[in-house]
Length: 256
Image 1 (cartoon, one colour):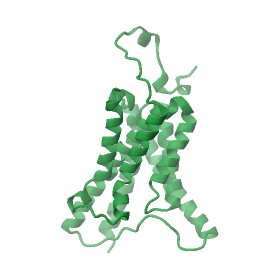
Image 2: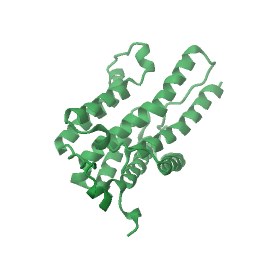
Image 3: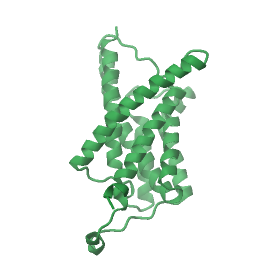
Image 4: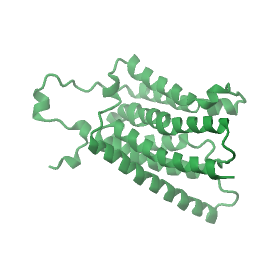
């Protein structure tokens, strides 16, 4: 049988079986523990938005730091370490081969193109069948290049290229995937985590962005299953965000 049909995470060989240095995978967290930690992670990523909705303003410096993603990282690390699991093994943080790098970047580019096409299709359908103003991302307003703009762009790239891909993938394709897959199966886990991943992007964007982002979640989840590695889905997520960040930066700098 071709190795294409079996995820890498579940492949073993006779050599592996006879090698005493190979450590068996740790048992996944229980269902309720997984759901509890996952809920805490979702609250962490929404924490800044929830504070803004409550009228709480963050100090100036914290507004330019990936505060919510830092909180999410703390939740995920706590979930794994407090349960005495091995961090890299439990979250499937595998070393990237050149083939993995190619997969991550390639599928990231494909994912971004599909994301944009789906956004356009959904926007057209909304314009045809839904009355009222379309809902979407908050418009980016350009202006002169000031110190504040430079600081914002540094923060923007930090979130888009580092904080968001790493922490969100560790939650959805790492912690939640590992805890749910053994109970729900890979397909149901991918769909469920993708729906929640899309809904996580609802505040400030609207249902069109939720559907399109959820579709990206399906791609990232499939990559996690297919390669057995969260590292590949992190790279694909970072690639999608890199393209988006380049376009967003151009809009900021070029729009009068």
